[in-house]
Amino acid sequence: MKKSRVKGDHVTFNTLVNGCVYGRQLEQAYQICMDAFSLKVKLAGDVYNNLLQNLVNSKDSTKFEWAAKVCHNMKSIGIEPEYNIYSKVVKQLYGENTNPQPGQYRKFTNSRRNNRDRALTEKNY
Image (tube, rainbow, N blue to C red; front, side, top):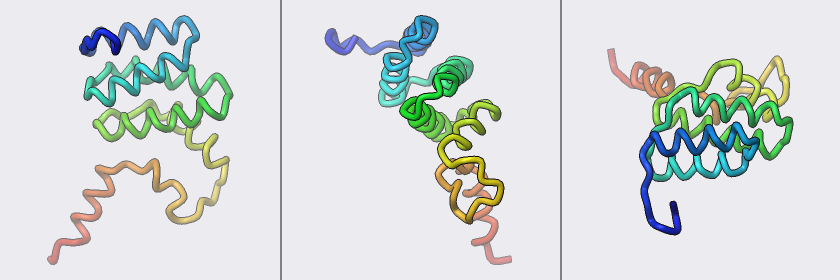
């Protein structure tokens, strides 16, 4: 698609990502997913979650980093990853620390909640 300069739609990208995941070609699935983000093509939530689940199940640290990037991009376009997958990614990246330091999970916080809380504290009542 890149060589022929064809821009796919969400159906094309959904099919490509799912096909690569099904064929256990996770690196290609990840690259196609990132291409979709860069082209501002929004995939179906179950496609993202399917990719994330397979990245997490691979137990490869590089693939956990990919999963974190996919989660971050999903959140930036307003799609929440499944909680159980998201928690596995966070635990793998930051460890199973039961008493995290303030700001340790800042990278993965819900930006809408933070914006709401910030707006409430900035208003002068």
